[in-house]
Structures are given as C-alpha cells and as structure tokens.
Length: 415
Image 1 (cartoon, helix red, strand yellow):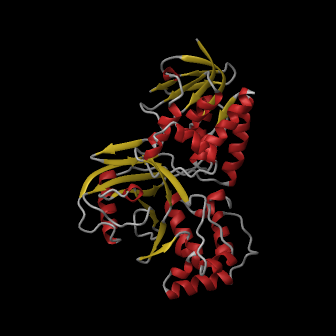
Image 2: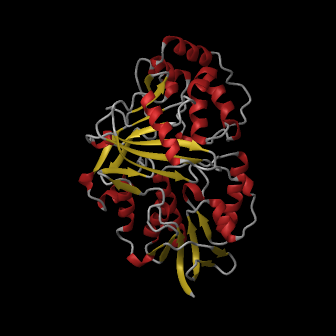
C-alpha cells in the first residue's frame, strides 16, 4: 500500500492550489482525463472558449502576481468590465437596481415609487423576501427575481437570505439616487483578467512547479476509509496523513460513508453553449443579463470583445433543474432564435459550436444546507478530511477565494 502525507481529490484550482501551497508530499487524484475541473478551455476552429465564463477577479495583488510569474504576462489582459441588462429591448448598465433611471419613464417611475414605499421592516426569512424588503416590488419583479430564478432554476423563496453573500450588489436608496447623477457601478468584478489562451492558462500556472508524477489523471477516488485513513481508486489503495477534496460535498460524504442528509444539498445545472460566428457582433460589452423568462438564456458573454477579435465568439448560459434530459441540439435552435430576437445575431453565420453541461453548477444555499454543510465538514475535518472550494464548501465563492482558502489550510496542516 502506498503511503503519502496528503491525498488531494480534484485537479482544479482548489486542489492544485493546495498542492502548491503545501510544498511537497501531495498526490492529486483527478477522475477526468484532463486537469482543470470547470476551468477547462476548448480551442476549436480558431475560437478559444472555456467551459463557461471563467474570469479571475483579484483582490490580492500577491496572488495575481504569483500566477502571472508562471504565465506569459503579455498574453494576459486586464479588463474594465462592461456589463449590461437587457430589459424590454433596452440596454441599461448593471447593476439594475442602481441604474433604474436608465429605464423607460414608466418603468423608472414604478421602480422608484416602489423603492420609496417598500417595507424595510418586513419579516425576512428567505432570499425572495429580502429582495422585496430592500428594493420594492418593481425592481424585484422586473429584474432581480426573474433573472435569478432563471439562473438558479428554483424558487428564490427556498434560498437563504444571504445565499449570494458579498457577490450580491446591494444598494441603499441613497446609493440609487446618487448613481443617477454620479455613476458608480463598482462591484467585486469591476475588473477581471483573462489570458489569450483561455482559463486553462491559470491551471497551467498552478501545474508548473508540481512534480509531473504528482497529478494522476483518470483516477477516481471511489471509497474513503475514515478510520484507516485510506482512499481507494480503481487502480490502488493509498494511505494518507490528510485528505483534501474539492469534489462536491455530497459525493465526498457518500464515498466516506459518513451519515448525512442528502436532501439538504440541492443545486442546478447550467447548459453552456460556446458559439462562433463568421463576423463581428455587438461591441463594447463583455456580458449581458437577460431577465425575460421568454428567453432561453440568462446571460450572454462576448469573448471577442476581450481581445477585440474579428469574429463574434459567445458563451450562452441556460439554467436547468438538477434532473431531466438535456437536448443540446434542439435547445441550440431555440438559443439561435432567441439571439436573433435580441438582435445579437443578425445576418451572422454560425461556423463553430460546442456545448457542455455544468453539473453541479450553482448550489442552492438554504438554512438546511448551511447547517448540514457545517456539521459534516466539521466531522470530516476531525477525521483529517478537508472539503474545500465552491463545491466542497457547498457555497458561492470566487476562484481567488479557493486559492486563499487552500493556502490557509496548507499553512494550518503544514505548521
């Protein structure tokens, strides 16, 4: 039996970041044939696409510098984000709630009136009630509720009040009114970085200093014995000192045999289309949000506007429930029709396309999931198993957050 100090499950950002930070002794097991997790990149017919829009938003200059040292810095562009909301055929700046003055007059009046006369003292027990109490009926029902229900593919009343944490762009009445004269649409992702070769370049940066034989592809962790400190794959059994996993928490719990409430962990899937066209499309925008429930997608992003290439290159995202069949070919026809309806596609010719289902995509953060996540992660940690990352932590976080988390864990375990 092999014996290693650390076994890492998952060769995505979280797992590779930990393997770097621990400074040796980590064996990374990856079920897929490629590294990257959801940070994979597809290069096809001259187009560069990710599995979805994976952009890095750095708050820590040291982390950004560390990654760039391991990349071709000339190929990484820092972009001041331009994002829009398409409402009734009109584009307004994001976030919607701070730019209601850009709406058609009657919609603006409705939003401002309901914002002023909202009931901030109303009882708030879920995400939907929070939206009504903080922003009033019109802002909630014109954008915040329909957009987020398309994204999460669930009733927002099932989500915790703070389901999106710091990533939700809150705004007071003062903020909203002030923004009518002095625009300030800053948020956590006001700027982002993106390499010419796609998000996989960040994965390559994380791989650069790791021994080649420390990452094992096509090797799924099937069973974890918490008492024996062993992990079994289809190829072997490995004894570990500590195990770090970025796999979805419910899968880790099942593999370890730890008793848990599977019903506490709900989530959606996202069907992503990467679409390449024969010529340029809209300019000056990096992604747009679409609250209209009649449209299939909730967001459309423009890779070509990051590097100003001469052919429109889109990612299109559709929120789906966790169960049910996916008809990628049939849904593509509707997507193209919806893009034409919104005049994103006019006389363009589709010359290349790719699709992928993110499963899971966005986890549903509920009171029940928060309690069960805390309970089970604490139990696992007491047995030297650490569940990290967006899916290991069953949370909403940035890619940089995963690096910060796993560096802190490495410092704790290596102390």
